[in-house]
Image (cartoon, rainbow, N blue to C red):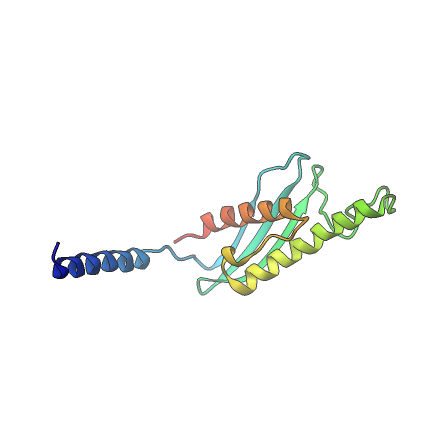
Length: 140
């Protein structure tokens, strides 16, 4: 194949890629919620995303226990007290990670830039799934 034909084909490929990027769906302004599937214990994640001018302007993320209770500062306690410090510490690591996931996503505006926190990967998977579900409703 001649050098000119190679350049021509490369140019066509590049033009095709650029045009494909132009067709990328944006997001409608508004508030969107998404929910993940349930984990092995019946818990799930729930995200609320605010989009302004086609950008992520806000993000809140909570996970809920099987009974619907939000995992918060009491998550890991038994009857309001810490009966197992190690369990409580691990539970609270997940709570802090949930806040970090939402904050990082809000600041970066890109789900690919949110990294899993070691020890909170279930919450990360729930976050990712919930965001993807919310964004489905926001597509133009």
